[in-house]
Length: 135
Image 1 (cartoon, rainbow, N blue to C red):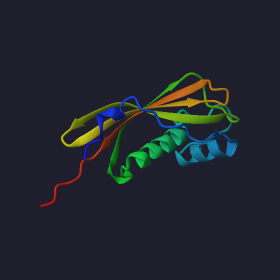
Image 2: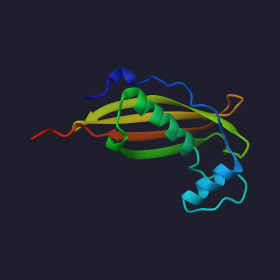
Image 3: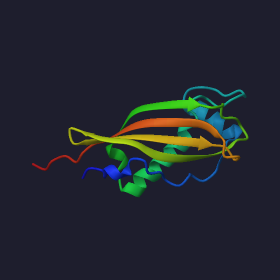
Image 4: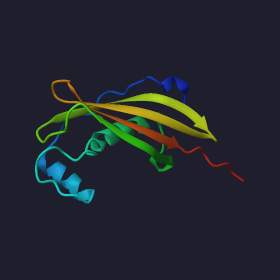
């Protein structure tokens, strides 16, 4: 069943506060084949929070993760993510279109620090594959 166009412009509540620790950054760097030796978190670290916000969206809409194809991801930084930051992410559905029975969902997750200041915007394109027809 296609998603409702009224989702465009809607936002979910922010994720719970996430404390950026040296251990979390080091674990993320190791999981992505790198090494963190101090300084800002890796450029793709905000995916940790953006994915949590995306999963909340999928749950709220009753969408199955196994039918999602991740089409694109972009990060637009206001400032680097640093150890000691406490961040939240708020996901907004920025676009929705249909191609060949699939929903193409554009999302924007704004990551803010404990003062409410914008740190990073994570934009993603998700392809929600339509249900296969029964023979």
